Image (cartoon, rainbow, N blue to C red; front, side, top):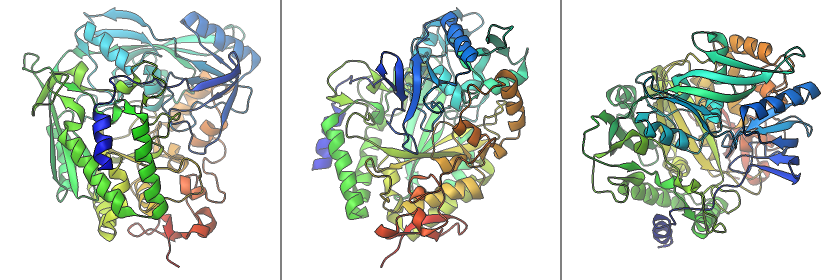
Length: 577
């Protein structure tokens, strides 16, 4: 009864919600600042500090900021409007660095309908980009499903949608030009504005398209768009018995294909999604239900249920609730409507600008946090880990088989994933970006419970998630998503990129003093130190892979043990007394 009460409240939640807080907080004006991400916590739960934050409104102001910091030898990092990256990409070293916010660099610079190009500043959100393109009757072919990302943020982390078609699903592969503001020499006035394109300076361009914010501040970018088109979407739920085979071919059959895998239930939701002629009947809208505003007290109640299940070790209640949630979401077509209001049946047909991305919980009306995005750190809401990696298509069937083998050992083990909409799987292709995807692959996105109050609190069946994580990264050589993941995903990651040395060469050329680099970015690039943190309980939050019991929670019965299917894994397993 409680669950369905929550559903009713959430379904009819306000159309708008309290907007997300600014990720930067300062004690005095724009000085003595801290910065966080949209969840309010980094993987290591550290507090990131900076001497001040700058909010340039024009490229000229941005140039002035970078020049002044370069002259002073100050470290710089870029922060976006909503700061959605989970790792510490936004953090400077120590307390003396400068944060450069792109919050007000959010303007359209130039449009060229005939050439089908659109130039915008880097702080423009995906939602704004989609809307501006639609005004020209143009469309971005592929994009992430969450529209709260900024153009610069998407480029910094290699954000993408799902497709094997065309140039693939990565946003950065549809750029034609980048304006980059980097440190300069004394003769340059301590700053340099570079105009990069694939034809004029391909090496710098392919480094800048996925840059991790290490080359400077992206000021403007130009997109090559396509004429507006429509899509026809149908969700189908099937048994996962032949899923390994289907995963290899489905993306070739449907342009915007993806999957939601419910492994504990033995089910998969197939997204059958293709282009149709613009004169096809339909005015559908994709408004993903979990991205809508939610009533804060209801979100808090749902979180309390999950905390209670974790405390009691009751996986049965967790699994029962997961089944109801997945059934409900499938029953409402995950929020897709045929006319912007109600769902009347498949297929749902709508124009690309209305079917590709959503995120209505960002709509800005202050209501005292009565409603909010469900992960807003100001309320008792979702607090999760995200483990996201892409596995080459040539290995996907074997990986799926290994995950199924884990489920066979304990069917309840992965219900925690299904409480968070299941495993989202999206297709990606190889990219010319030096730090982009290396080959055709499927990206697996796992979202799961994280204790908000105590990093030393183990999770129910956490050994199964840890084994999947290690299996993907170590056995199948998966690439982690740059904007998600726990620390261990980035251990030695740079060795997986064949063009890593080219990226490092460009980085050295554009920022020889490393003013946009930090200790953490040096670690993930293999330049200095290691991104893992070895200490008591470090494996519980993915700061390390356990090598001894103290890295788990021995006082709570969680000890370091080999994996059940991938025996080379070392995971925190609950051992009966």
